[in-house]
Image (cartoon, rainbow, N blue to C red; front, side, top):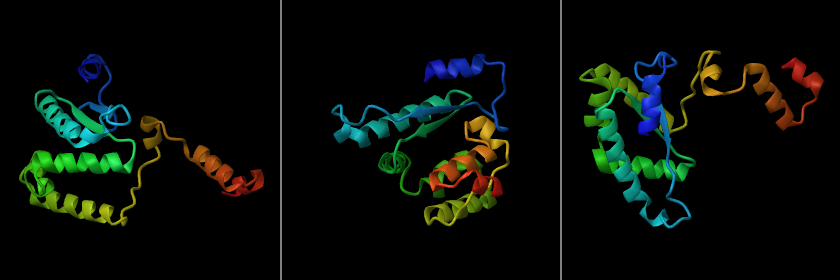
Length: 157
């Protein structure tokens, strides 16, 4: 994590996508079949503590990356354990939005919509450049292949 932070600081490039701070992605590893699976919760709570200290003392954001929904749920439980069940109804929201109740209410509403599968994100066409996602034509081609469509049908899309 420190090496990635040092590399981000050493880079002459500004943070991408209009971010104020560089974003580091940290995958959760080491809690699977190697004997750590029984301690996932403790590992994640300790990791949350380490990351909170790291970002509090450096101008950087860190995204914890999970590989599946079960690990995401475990990470969310660890976050709740660290910050309390109402973490995003108080304390942690204050870090993100300050004392701005309007922003907190909007974020809470979006979180509610997302948790009930009622939220769809629409992003500009440039998002694929920074995220390694396929361009529109490439996405259509992949979907057409998966659907078994031929060249003629693909050209109609």
